[in-house]
Length: 381
Image (tube, rainbow, N blue to C red; front, side, top):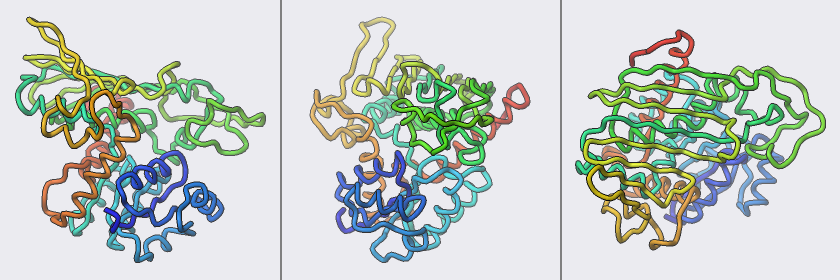
């Protein structure tokens, strides 16, 4: 993949993660774009990249750039993705794809008219055991799905002194905890089960309606390490907590709990899937183990081992059993699928990676969740 050049837009928490994953794949990282020239220069030096881009136009006019990875604040995703597609660049965008379903629908339509790959980085679906669970569902091993329940919980915004741009509605959107991490759960469950949401009922809560913002901005997750002496109080309207019930087409039920104020949970996605033949349970803080529950025989614990996985899951397990793989590997595997698709060159073929259509679905769900919370009842999709 060394013949492909990719530029990374965003020098905060996630941008450098993209750089690392691309390098592991052998994709050439042409350079990086920060919020200003100073941040671009600092990031390029720290990551040993050849170019520090000054602006988006400079990125899109670079003939060495075949694709762009968008890891900037949410409000910029629509503009950056649209301009990149118009410039003939493949796009891998962090979620959300855009700030509204109207914008995501436009991007889906734009991407459909181009011979380009257009993906959204729902990386959680790239864990090997996520693909194993999906294959077990598709092969009939799980049987009819009765229910899917789970959570995505963190503690990085536990205190009212914890602050990041993501808590601001104008930067990240009206929905925060559910949109930021809950959408990963919803995408993962859709990928595993194929179930489509028919209706939902949601309740949201802002634990800290007032947060203390440092006089200088802080990086994502860095608030746990240090506190700024000088702060100002700022009103927060986005959710710290969310609980959503789902009705799926076909009769299955589900529920999701999301929190960014749960002490001790650093980045924990969990699900338990109840089927007519067996149950499945998985936890992202122990990602190399899939629990398989039985009624009439001993339960099982499947460890991530290419020798034991299905053919569909094996490509996502790069190391032998006992050699654990984790969060950074999901980026590599998501991008591997994306660039293998780019190299194949058939843009009418089905995509394995999460697409703009997947990104649109999640924004539609988020808007329904906001509507349900506001109305205090069930909303049909």
